[in-house]
View 1 (spheres, rainbow, N blue to C red):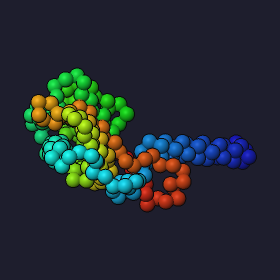
View 2 (view 1 turned 30 degrees about the vertical axis):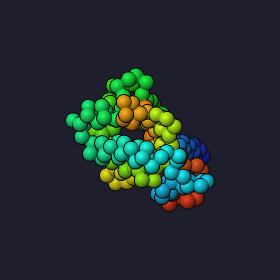
View 3 (view 1 turned 180 degrees about the vertical axis):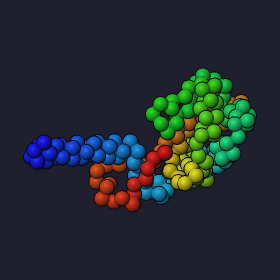
View 4 (view 1 turned 180 degrees about the horizontal axis):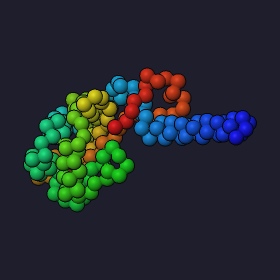
Amino acid sequence: MSSGAGKAIRRLVAALALLGLGFFSGWLASNRVRISSGEVEKVRGPVSQGNATEATRQEILERLRALQDGYLKRDVNAIDGFMTDLFPRTDAVQCFGTDAEEWNRGFDAISKFIRTDWANWGDVKLNVDEATVSAQGDTAWVALNGHVEFSTKWRPIRVTATLARINGKWMFEQVVFQWIDRRAELKDLLHPGTLKIAR
């Protein structure tokens, strides 16, 4: 083989290696690298605890603490009592997880989803006392933030929910968990301190 042909092959191999590295880097950045400030979510506009009366607010905060307590204890043997206490046994209730495919409808689907969360997810720590709680009649809606702790890291989270007062007791009709951080963009590579590998 001539030296010219050898150089051409080496250049081709180097180009393919660079192309492969670029593809892998792009895949990693778009799917696994997240941007997180590691701080509490910043809220635009005036701080508000919502329009719920103080009595209603305290009742709702108690339900949020019960939700968080289940996610902290993560006792899969206690799932039946947890679900019966917090969710009405209907097909109308919904729970959205942080991932795109985590849309759960109905009491049984939510029970299975939460059981899986407790077995495989991290510890959910919510800023319950800072929740925004609004209510009208027998319907309430809440928004709050917090984070999920894993063995070596944590990620910020936002939770929104709708509750209904059923037989004098507030029950969750819809719960939505959302990651607060976002996918990395090319400009973020200039600030590597903000990059975090997603779970």
